[in-house]
Structures are given as structure tokens and as C-alpha cells.
Amino acid sequence: MREKYFWPSIRLVMSGIFLWAFFDKLLGLGFATEAPRSWLSGGSPTAGFLKFGTEGGVFASYFQSLSGNVFVDFLFMAGLFLVGLALLLGIGLRIAGYAGSLMMFLIYLSLFPPVNNPLLDEHIVYITVLLGIARSNAGNYFGLGKVWGQMKLVKKYPLLK
Image (cartoon, rainbow, N blue to C red):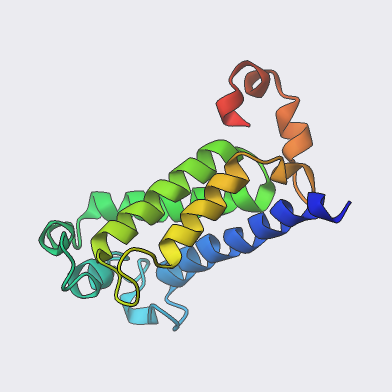
């Protein structure tokens, strides 16, 4: 009985990670992003990390070249919001899990190799968790997954589940 609540609980925690990052970068809540550097104030949500956070990585020069790109900023923010919202609502979890995993993998690559372990860091854990959510029925509890799964379009295209 308790096992059926494991993935839904993890799903909600992961939604908080994605949505918090989105709103902090959008509004500059003063944690990772200060208000004057928020996206709404004209700042780039990716510039600081891509320019300075990737130093020393094998792929640093590539990721640094993306710093401040408006298209990259838009994709990043859309990804944070849409993955976070899907996880919160419990709908579209397959796409959200795969898209979130791709985002985490790109962040992992930008930092490769990790500082504290030759291969693993928290992004690999997030990828594993997101793939678990994508393959579970985590949206059926504390979410709209059951209703979403009954829609004709979702039945026709199970990837939307």
C-alpha cells in the first residue's frame, strides 16, 4: 500500500526543484538569482552558470559559447516551467521525465567531469529519478494522471501519458 505513494511523492519533490528554479530565475527571488539579474529585469537565466559555472569542464568552451543566447534562455526557462508543471499536475509524465532527463544530462555534460566524484553527481541522480517517474504511474496519486490517461488523445499516443 505505501509503495504506491513513493513515486508520486518523489514526483512532487522534483516538481518543486524545477518550479523553484524557474521562479527564482524569472523573478530573482534572491537565492540563486538576485532581482536585478532576473529574467523579467532583462537578465539571462543561463549566462551566469554557462559563463562561470562550467569552468574547468571538458566541454566548457562549447557551453560558454551558449551563454546569454536568447534562444537557449527561452528553451531553458520553458523546460523548467513545463517539466515542473507536468510533474506537479501528474500529466504528461513520460515526456516530462525524458525532457527533464535531457536537461539534467546537458547540465551534467557542461560540468563534466564532476568535482567530487569522477563520474557521478546529483544530476545523474535526478536523471534516474525522472526516468523512474516517466515509467511509473506517479500521476495517478496526488495528481490528474488517471483523468489525463482516459483522454482519447493520450490513449492514442501513450507517449503523452
